Length: 549
Image 1 (spheres, rainbow, N blue to C red):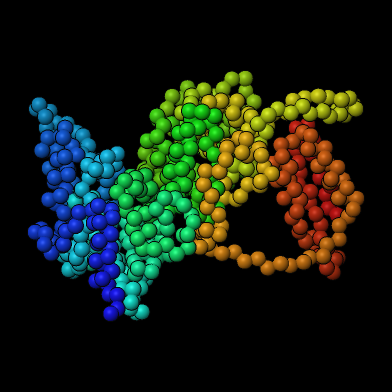
Image 2: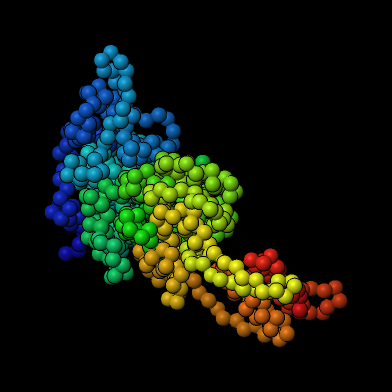
């Protein structure tokens, strides 16, 4: 006999009840108003248990707010509810003859056992039309997850058909999706999760239960459901790994991928340890295109519950990267519950750090740090996040540099690297590095500054997961004629600068030097090639530019 959609639904329900410990209800057996997607009986009981200090009037106000939303788009209403879920429902009530305000919580994120986890099938909602979702997951009576299943034995239906069905539900019964945090489409072979704003290409598999990337190429459906919906983990995801990227009409909702969730959790644990010991939080290597910037947002948010009111300083080595990251954090500022600030100058950075006792997300480039006689802050609850960590965080120790001045006299001075300058400014901070490219095994400097790898999500794994598109290279040989004299002059200049300049400056210059451009002359029949030696300013203030050859 073929394995039908009903068989698959029974298997999923069995997994939730027997493995994950969810209570089960059959939708048609629940007496309720089908025009409301809420499981109101469970919601009312949970509000009472989770808020023992609030009077019934406050709980009634919370229930009314959860059932009635102001006019707006579905995404706007979902955004309001998500804030209720993560931070509490604002309520007003009268006590002692005075009007008071407070928060009614709809979930206990710290103690999973205090919450009601219910899985229901054939849950009917009547709105623009009558629809029955295959499986709905409730937390304290709130329908947070909609699961659409398709038969694994029918070739004409698959997970893509399940995605289209979820989209139809949003049109036919939009009230169900006011509360939605996760949408799931599954046909046994493929199981993926996304949000109500996710395109089909943004739905992602959840391939591990414990954060291991081994055997993730063909993860089974039970790995998906157990990995994502284990009670404590699911609550953690709801609180710390679901957010909105707010950008006007282009606002969309984000659910962290499995690689982001487990890596951020490892980073939080590493940071907590480092804050009490050597300050080396480690290196977070997630390949380009896998959502590293959002991982930094999730990390910053989760950090607020781990350290006591930490100040986060985000350091980059380029203005464009600083602006890019700052923009991403600003679009998620509601989720972070504080507004990031971008340092405009060295003096502004000093003003932002000096005297600050807690909180704050500060963006700066490393060039805004300078050698100072005293620290900008000696607090321990400062976390420095360095993006593209291996590219500019060098020079932890001092070096003695000798050179001859214009008069031929020998001068001796002390050279202090960038990493040392930053650490002198924030001596008790914890440092964590984020990078999208692997660090060379010979690169001891990065490990000396940040410590060992926290998590590695490389290009191969990212391509397998569909987070990054594969890149194909086609080799091409270009025959160039180089001037030996120019090459000797360049080598000599680099040898001189190696004694006076940070390694990352030299490496950056070499990359610029490798760029070749055609030079078209009005009397030339063909474009010869010339080379520009990027201007380099060393510690002595000298600049060299061999010019065109």
